[in-house]
Image (tube, rainbow, N blue to C red; front, side, top):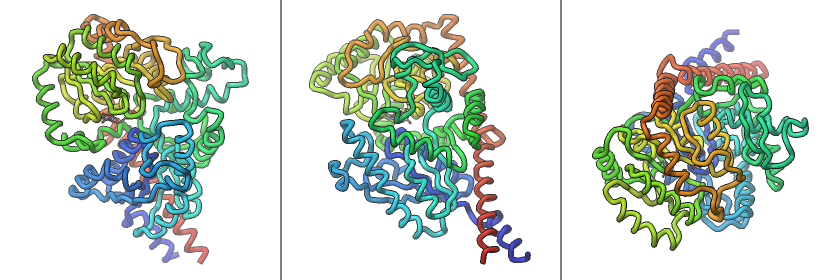
Length: 504
Ligand code: UDP
């Protein structure tokens, strides 16, 4: 009995829990995982983030900074098996992937990392206690099982998306969900009426060639020891409750994780591509603008726009006569856009700032001059806008973005759709004619015109930001969720040690 008590004391009292985080290697998945690493380390945990050589360069500076401040975050770099699946060398991140075939190979390569990850984790000291895996990495299930680790799923998207896409799938054969991909219907099992088309309410891998992967993802979630979601209880209460009930799992909403590092230095390093000079330039530019006057425009890291759509956005911004910061990423640059852009820049010189490539988004959204965000509704961007009180203009392009738009426009009512009821499965570089400059102009006016409706919307956005910040502070819902999650690990580890000892 004495021995047993000793073990319980040492594991729950003195040993640090050691979390291993396994992100999906895409900016929109790695960024929140690194934020989570900082949150856990700030509570005294030891954290190892699994990465690959090229991916690690994107957040090394942020982690070095965190280490210098005493946070215990390490990187475990594994080779990404490009050659084994026939991908060009260096295709380590989803933003390197160009075709569907490459994407299939990419997911195959990911699952081949299971063996090397087991070998790597066996060597870590102190031993890991818990594996936190992105929901898109179901292969980590076997890794955790082999090493006897607790395993939590980290969900990048909103709980609204998780619940709605699950319900649509579950009710697919009930008659409540039409077979036709573009026939409108109300999502079953929700507390309010939300009309969608099926093409915009699919789970991540609900495509014929990804059926098996979707099954594995669903199964890995069903067998996990708990779910971590980047959201906060006050934002998604009914959806969190319903999802919890549907899955019968413990859910810890621990976000918005973008509030983990509030210092300006971190917001510049997040995503790791902005130099101090660029950041200063942007900051000075914003300083010279009126409060809440600037439209920030960005479509995240994966959504692509055709040249004609890019021209329509530009023309709409120009016609709005308002200041704007527009991020155009490299993959949206084409010879036509390269030729057209300097002319637009010339005409809007006094009030437009066009950033090519990468922008320090959270730094920009944190600036008081920013008054609206034209976004593709990636969940990180959406939640960053929510946590900073910025009303949104929404133009979803793919995946969870369509349902996130519904959450923002219909449930939270802090956004205006750029094109209401746009019916598409996927907005790509090849799409044409989905939006026009008048749509851009109209949506900007609706958010910025200062009328009663716009003011009420802005007020709701501000209120959510207050609640988001409160959630992340000691005593707040997300802060306490993280405490409970860590406590769960400590308790479970204690039991495991005890069981092991009695077996001896
Ligand atoms: N981001 C950024 N600068 C950019 C583009 C994106 O800092 O120029 C960040 C953004 O703040 C967010 C993430 O990258 O944290 C993108 O994630 P999101 O879920 O919004 O969209 P995705 O890129 O996954 O479609």
